[in-house]
Image 1 (tube, helix red, strand yellow):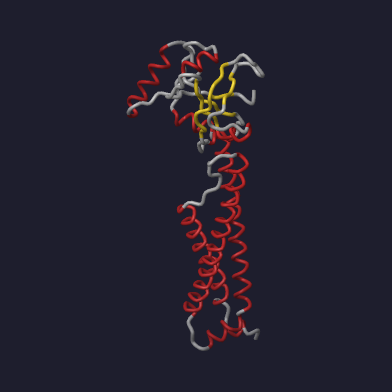
Image 2 (cartoon, rainbow, N blue to C red):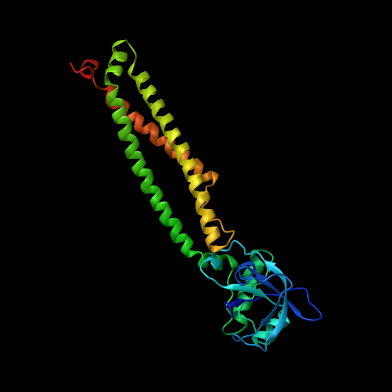
Length: 269
């Protein structure tokens, strides 16, 4: 027995042998192709099981709940599944499609009140519960992002202060030539904003390349189409906005510190 099996309903039948559909990971690992015959049984290495024919290979969905499990999936006809599993007319769980929120509430109430042990949940709640690991990782990434933004802000401010300090004589000469303090401030702020935008563009480029590499590695490792890293327009908009605002603030702080100093002091006299 290769692994625990997850079964569901198939709609086609074969007059000679029952047909099954198998997971693409199982097909790859066990070298199984469409048309191959398999023996299925509830016990490992059993030779007296039912012979079935592989009629389809199923592509795995992008479901985070499947990532943590290494189970293979095999889909049977419903009556065949009952016979193989020995469950009779019993099921562990089933899904019900409803029409609208009111129908959902009524179905939840009716199913939960039908008998002791029946428990109904919204598919949304189940998805949230099974994705808690990804939520923790998401919060961790947000924390890293905040720390990175704070560190980059301090780094940008230090760069602007050093850059402005190197231009003390140039600013003093401009002031003595009659250039107003506001014009000097505007020039330094514009330069800081441009520097922030260039840095943001480079960051987005590095992030896009890194995101593509992460997806390629983990999709190949887990053999799933699930997207592990995603750069959305909202993330890009937030990054550009923060970068521009922080760049302007850094340039403003550095320029105000410089223009408030008398020109002759800037010359060192």
